[in-house]
Image (cartoon, rainbow, N blue to C red; front, side, top):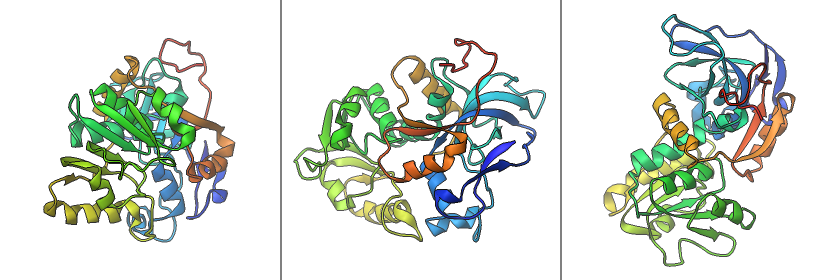
Length: 339
């Protein structure tokens, strides 16, 4: 099969499209014929090998798993057990950990779900990482209640576009922070207020929020706390910033854990996990019309390096998608995702 291979840590130019062995599903796994895959922050980190702490699990000198790709959508090709809930031909999507930038990938059934019937495969691939992160941040960690005031810093990005819609679905009053060019997009997603950070500083304008989801990491904890109510919650969710060894997220997470016992606000870093039940919950929100994935650009498989380079530019609206294959022999309305 064809796959995008990353033999050594480095920049997107080192990625190579070539033939590799097709993975076979083990018990409790499903082999998926991948039709679309999303570029996610973890793909950039795994490709680049930074922060260096990630190499403890991915390989110290070179990547242990050479095929990137954390989120996919496609059709079941084979199942690894006779009692699987999935059958060949089923349209599915998943967050898979690695191996998605390939024609076939094997996925644990615990991570796999039927994809929303009203999405294309490209749209479905955009959901598993960003959508699950936003859902877990607001529903599980923040426990957002109707009427609460929520601010999303980085509201136009891969997590932020989902976060705006999910917070609205939970009944919150939502403020999104983004650049001038993205104000219209964030407003169209349902934000009650949009702050253009080039014109206004949300940490000094006097407004306070019950919860802040920080997807950018460009403000200090003390600045962010200034925009929180006395018992408000901050959820840091960005790996950007200084620190080639620990990375921005881990550094800020440690700071939050150290500071939290001494302040009235709750500082709650968390790591999202790929779970089938959360994809099922997102499917309900998507099929009801409450949530719609936002795609910035779509690249063919042979332009995966360009897709990663564009993602690395830091100006992505929503998600960047790589198309891996074409759906054959299925009509729209059967979950095919056909355009």
